[in-house]
Image 1 (cartoon, rainbow, N blue to C red):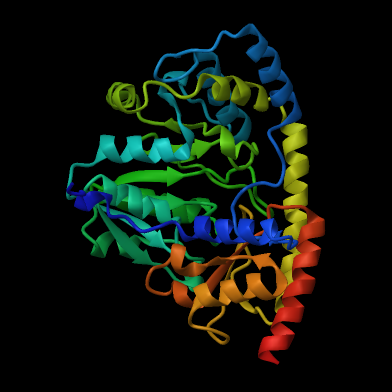
Image 2: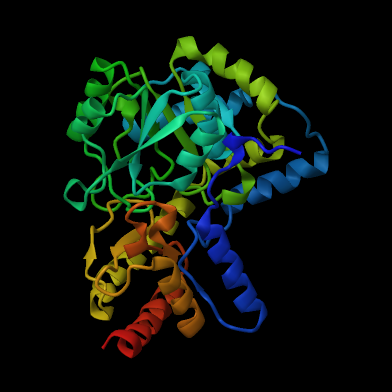
Length: 382
């Protein structure tokens, strides 16, 4: 039976790294997980307790496609709390994780064959979801000098129909300040480019607060999720903010693709929005982990990277040690039991000489990771 060309997408290499790490653990080896972008903490306690009570009522089923009205209203309030902006709850669309948001955004905004710019290095599933929808991902090769973020020149020279930016970004943790984000949005408007802002790591910032595109314009799509700041990766629940005249179009697509987001996850997310104190404690751990890595990675020999502004990643250039990041990561896993991600996931052209560390786990794990890395580098590169 024939396979479609649009389903011929690249694998997500980090998932393969996770499987290799799992097998090593199964064989009895103690693995330090620095590969996956998953908080080491569970869903907030108040949320877990709330859904446990709700499950006893056995009252779960389909919800309306756009999501529980009380959840949409509560997310609207979050934008007032975080950014001091007033968002009509009708513009809030609850999605099956941020991935559902990307699928809906691309399906609503673009026709087959249109060109959507994504930063490279960047989250690999952007490209693959675009390909699966017969859209053309345009890799924008960003530079460390621009903190791995696109510039207005990238819009002007690439004949784009859309631009997707992430701030804080995966895998670099870099953020756009308000001036830079405003320039990108204004240039997109001038060149008739639809603007999508991935804000999934908002809430996890270190020196400056992340800026939402909605502070600048309502003529954009914003995608967020309960996976990162709210520690709810496996619940697969997220949201979008779209212009008011796009809501019905998004709703119709979502009705047919998803019916509705998971009811249990929506209830849990509603409770998680009231767990600010617990969630901010998680961010304190990430901040401490970041400080440790910024101090210790150079001692191990990893000196070329841009300090992350947010999220929980450090993206490191290893070209002075290796031009085969996949083999490098395998060797680190085999020899010292540290799982890290090769840059090939994030940059198809330059990722063979980069790696990503995720520091979303416990501080004890981060300290142990740095010890093991110094042993590995001393053995192999001194």
